[in-house]
Image (tube, rainbow over all chains, first blue to last red):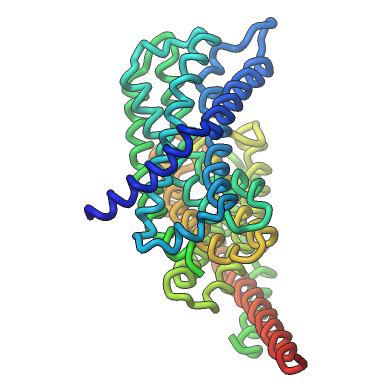
Length: 227
Length: 222
């Protein structure tokens, strides 16, 4: 158990060290997320102004799209640097490598969301500080579920053809429940008459999805990555 | 499945389908929806076939992933295609019924959304198999496991949330007049499903044998 987590942390540290030095994935993902928010804000207009009810949906779309980018880039980096072979040859538990990669992706997404959420709050007058803890819980559980499935699929697809287009094609149907739960929970928190029980219910759903997805991912990572 | 068995089952299935319209016509009208309700006799068995196929694909994929059973992978492909096929039947017959019964073609309620998602997961499986290049057999097997995990969720979605779609109670509490037609159609669809599955898996087997032969002869010539 100890080696499992130390391996995972080692992989995560490696990813984050590279990231801190180049900041490539972070900047590009962040910029993409902001562009997403802008494009959607201009697309959903009423009387020439952005629709305020659309804030929750737009936030989660930005998370999903930019998350897909970040996932693809994380493994692309491995493939490009030809370190994937080294990773697979390392005498480490494959699931531990998965967890390490997952933590790295989560770190990037957390940083991106820390900037995008206040931006959405600003642009749509969304009350992000009304129930901050519940909002954070929603974001954490939702992003975790999305990233858990995403890391598995991105790893699976790294050697496949058409991997860039196949990742969203495969990822979105499976993570639709996570997105729905995230949007509905966030919408419940953003409405004028905050619906706390509803938000809690959706957080419960997200925890359930997270458990199922992580279990499935840990289970299938090993056989899927070996020949 | 030998040729003789296949033929016999095919004949039985064709007979079932030939008589099915009669059974459906003899069944009583439902109180509120009248004639339109009779899409039920094809819509629900097709959905049952879709769920069964998703399970078959998931189990076959698990056997392939964890036990390296190559034959299981061929059954998985067949089952995935049938999820797409029977899913199409469900997703076309459903809206046709919905338009008359609810006034809209589609609603984003839990049951409809989750069924569409299940269908798309298996479409993704097929896309991956087709365009993913080498190694996509293992990846799609992983995908199928997620699809299989989705099925119970789709089934109980009507019971957990308040949806416009009828609950799972309906089948258990069918009026006696409708039961005959319904289970007849279920039998017909299940036989059709088994036939299609066997035929498609057999096709994959033949393709694999052909591959092997090509490779074997290549070695000989070289």
